[in-house]
Image (cartoon, rainbow, N blue to C red; front, side, top):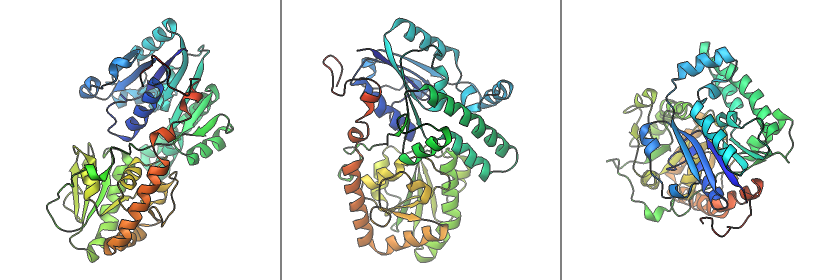
Length: 407
């Protein structure tokens, strides 16, 4: 049995944000089957030094602090004709590590997490390549361009166009191209011309033991009114746009019926545009929290009012796992195998978001039943074990844990 080279754009531990949660579980699944070498970037020194209980089980690792400023990546992109997403993650140390590992170890498979890292696949590598795109990033930038104006719209349009070409090239090179939902996989098949033998979906799961409401102590906002919650990485543009829209366009209608209602925004690194919402229209910007479960369990309703979204929203799965009623926009609900009106509620406009949230606040029994049905669905279909069952075979590995490899 050979070894695996695992390339990812961000340190896959601790699993404290959406992309890291997915890469963390992929990595652990592969480590249970074969020796794994990891090459990745860290956003800061704290992330680079972060400990992990399974670190000693890695065959080797290279964590590089990503210090290249975005403006320099942009200049390199213009001069080279490449997407900014690639030039910002181009690094000589990672290239040297990849060359050394492949040159000295029996690497049978390169597993690439996120499109930025596909540039490190050697042209002459003869082994298996499995590419996890997650989302169709080119389509995301196309959406940004359609939604924007001025120079940024041009930049996003360029990025979408160049990434689309790159994604097709990499998928053509890979044995398997994975996406987080069947909707994303279907979209990419249409854009690339590849069939379902090469392009497939492998969804996100939920740590069912961790997201157990009985283990969480409710957070206290210091008021007695209903609490509406949004969770996520709060410097991520779609999340910023979502809370701006909900605070400004939806909360006034909710407050007209429930004056004591509060909209809590919990998540790391809130951007200035998010912080400016604090104290307006019943909005409270919480920022980073020690235990997101405490906020989910304290919420009366969890919302996912994203206007631009791709793939599967972990924030929705986490709230559903904790039996909370969820109101999601259509794009935030896409990719989740659930039924509108039975497991969550889908709002198709800001007016409908207000109406559905108010309906749940008014009828606590209906809200409780919706949450319980959601929890049952997540437990039946969204464990990581179930979601990643096919991963070892795609990477050419045995499907059962092999003696001598950590379980």
